[in-house]
Amino acid sequence: GMGIGLVFYGSAEPLSHFASKTPHAEPGSQQAMADSFQFTFFHWGIHAWAVYGIVAMALAYFGFRKEEKYLLSVTLKPLFGKKTDGWLGYIIDIITVVATVIGVATTLGFGAIQINGGLSYLTHNAIPNEMWVQVIIIVVTTGLFVLSALSGLGKGIKILSNVNMVLAIALLAIAIVVGPTVKIFDNMTESIGLYLHEFFGMSFRTAAFNSGERSWIDTWTIFYWAWWISWSPFVGIFIARISKGRSIREFITVVLLIPTVLSFIWFSAFGTMANTVQQNGTADLTSLKVEETLFGTFSHYPLGILMSIIAIVLIFTFFITSADSATYVLSMLSEDGKLIPTNGKKVVWGAIVAGIAMALLFAGGLKALQSTLIIIALPFAVVIALIVVALIVEVYHEKVQMGLSISPKRYPEKGQPFKSYEPYEDKDSEDAQVLEKSEAKAAGKKV
Image (cartoon, rainbow, N blue to C red; front, side, top):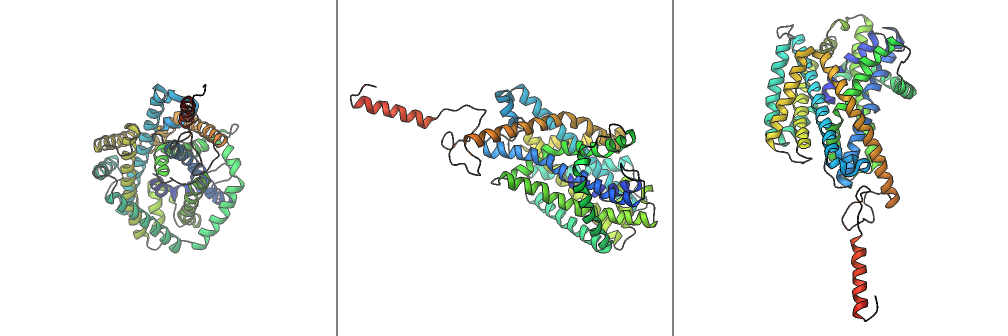
């Protein structure tokens, strides 16, 4: 999902902030150039991965440490106890599934729009940028990821994932070499400083008394927060699964910093390329559709055709791997946290996600996708807030009772995890008391 988003908005978001009014600057000004990266970093940086990270940490903590099921409802046991095994748990898990479905369907809609935009731009509209083409793209890719889902997350997906990484690195390397290299790194360095300086100001900005600025926040910031929230169950489960054996400190450091830095490099490269073309008057990239911006940018640099082809292939492979993984996660969530769900469920969820993606495109294209995300993210934002509280409560209880370490020295019962929300009896202590009484009785002592 993040992969499709990075390609879709890699040039488009910095360019939009540069060429349109931001909360701080007038379009096309030097301040707008600085703001374009500062706000892009804000939307794709630590805040996004903090949302993913908190859900992933809770799932990993309760899944590995407490040996619970991989369900979001389980993470709320410190607050609600056994109620999470009943109607309350079902409601939470249903909200989780709905948020994941909408988040994935929206991202696949973005992917179809981007692929169609690239093909249309490169073929000079021989392949039209139309709804029916996007539907064909969704149907074809759905068929491919359903086939891969039926075969399991095996060699095929692993190969595609590796291809994704190679193509992304190759595209980024070419962009840095053929683009304004020095300017790319200058922009990135200064923008990181501005981002850190304005971190808290941007985080708490609501523009309560400025309707114009509020509109900008609704269009960009609120949309992104909704996107990250809707994707957090899906991404959280995968992060959790690869985090076994890590300390909380290691987990937080890696999840927050590594993807954030990579996103900064990505947007610095493609954003600088687009802004430079626009600033120099070489072309008016703002006249292009959002999905065509990246390809319009490439056309003004050496190896532009090659970069465009790589970008289209990259989106296509991201599309398949994201959708395949999503069917796996949705099947797992709908089978009571079962780590190896049935193939039938994968096919059903694949068809549902594809159908919703097409329905949203027919309902209004990009605007419909964005609006649906914002609506569905609200209830799940409440769930995430409760997860934060539950995680803090349980970690505090464990620290008080046992001390925190990767491998605690003692357990309430041999081989059993500590759970503050499940009262336990010390069986070893009971056995010792029974033994002591029997020995005393055998010795003729009064017990």
